[in-house]
Amino acid sequence: MAENIIIAFDLYGTLLSTESIANELATHFGQENAASLAALWRRYQLEYTWRSNSMSTPPFSDITRNSLGHALADSALSLDRESIGRLIKAYDSLSAFPDVSPALETLAGESGLTAVVFSNGTDAMVTASV
Image (cartoon, rainbow, N blue to C red; front, side, top):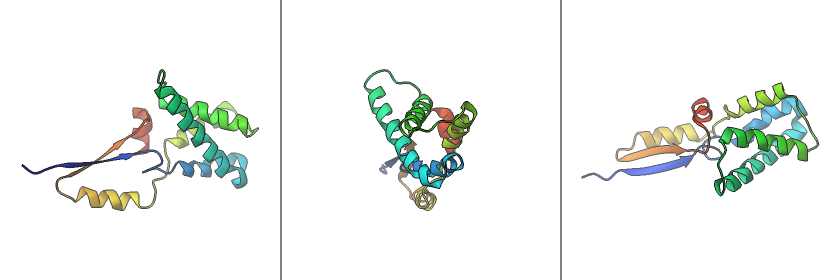
């Protein structure tokens, strides 16, 4: 019997660049604030996820929205609800790292190898992203 090897990839930060949200943030706060705000947003998103995993687990979409609010507050910045909604929607369209597509295509051509993606994202977030 042939052995099947499974390779698993995390979606956010491994296949999709969480830093790519900085392009959308720049439309609100300028390029000079966008990268640092994107990094702070991601930091809070991860912190909220780690904490919630040891307690009750809210949907990752809620964690993403709440961590954005925290990052904005820490940066003394604010946005209206509509703009926040657009940013959350943009988070569902993060850019893949440039090497992802060729790497996954190569793996897809390998017999006895199965590549899978896992994520904290909700079904809607993941479906919109991939």
